Length: 148
Image 1: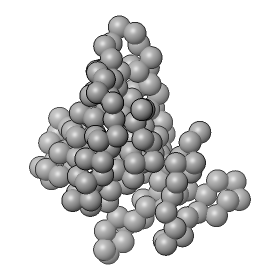
Image 2: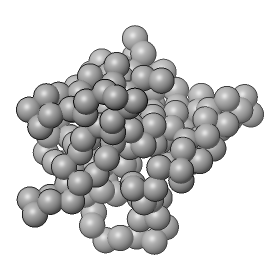
Image 3: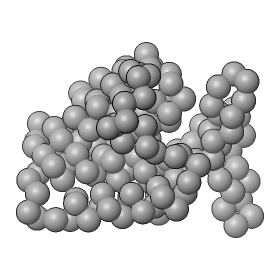
């Protein structure tokens, strides 16, 4: 079974809003759904690393998250293209390609979200697409919202 993309999207939203307890539960559910392959192991390790870095709050200058501006959609798209090049590169092993695929998925999802700073924290809404209404606060996004 491939990585459940709706669950992964939810995981990304949870770590971006710093809901770490729920993100850990979602990550465990993702792990249970994955087959034991090298690609999936790399993908899972990337997800786990994202969670650890977001939780650590030490603003490590070497961590990719510390350098990432989630409001810069062009930069996110550039990172995504770069990660996808690594995914397609057959010189990388399956573990590495799975790892880069997770980051490509993260940048795709993060690029589709608009971050609104509020007093209570970060609130995410989907960007408007050619006359479509963005999601309301009480609606949950689905994978179809993020597919290209």
